[in-house]
Amino acid sequence: MLRALRYIASAALLLVVATDAALAQTILSRSALDSLVRPALSDRAEGTIRADSRTIDVGTISDSELVVVEFTLRNNHDEPATLTELRASCSCLHILSSQATIAAGGSYVLSAEFNPRGRSGVFSYDINIYTSLDSASPTERLTLKGEIERTDPFTHLPYAIGALRLSRTSVTLEDVTATATRRERIAVANNGTTPVRISARTTVEGLRLRCEPEELAAGSEGDIVIEYRPTKEPTTDIETMVILDGVEASAAARIIRITLKR
Image (cartoon, rainbow, N blue to C red; front, side):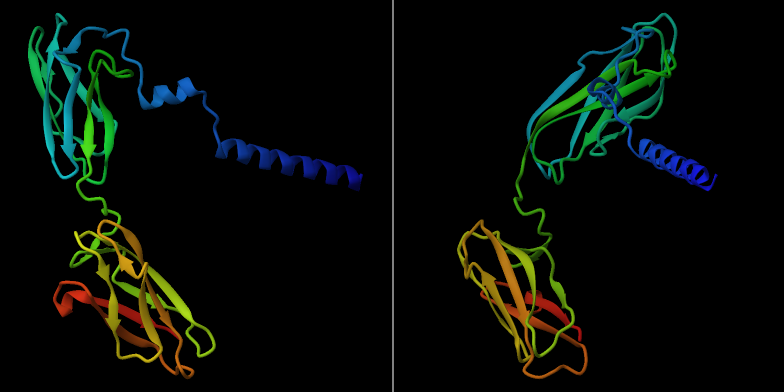
């Protein structure tokens, strides 16, 4: 009897685990997944709301250039149609127009703004238009496409010190002792037109900074390596800084702040 109860309990536990696993992951076919991303247009409202041009190609733009586009929609239905929802496929595509009602035989201009910041390469984004003619499926779909030319190749390095771009300007070295060297790296790039050799000044003995590679060529990336090994066991945490040399900027702009924690 006890063995039977144990078997039932084990089977129930396996069923719960299997159910949880099934709930945690849903397998979709490729067509089902595509339909979520780009739903099929409504059969019921087919041809009623049509754009003069479904696709606008903005050509090649820079990654800092905001682009505003306008689509003209026409109501070919014999009754008014209300635009109930406008869904963009990317947060970078901001719809400026609001819900509106288009009279039978009338037209409406839909405006949208595209922000390419942080993006590059060829793109294509949609605006799905839902109307009072069919709330379940889009009545019309508009597409904005083009190509983004990246003007800043180091957007992943947000901090600037002269011609240098850095991933951060402060570091913390944990668990510093006299028996081990602690090390941190800062990603760096030379956004200038000439090579740069970086050195640094500090007031803390045992604290060193170097660049890998030693000479950072124009347009290239590397690492600033900060190392600390005290000559004696530290008794307190230290808040300090280094001033980078080899960079054209004021001393106040060339500071990297460092925290040394025991």
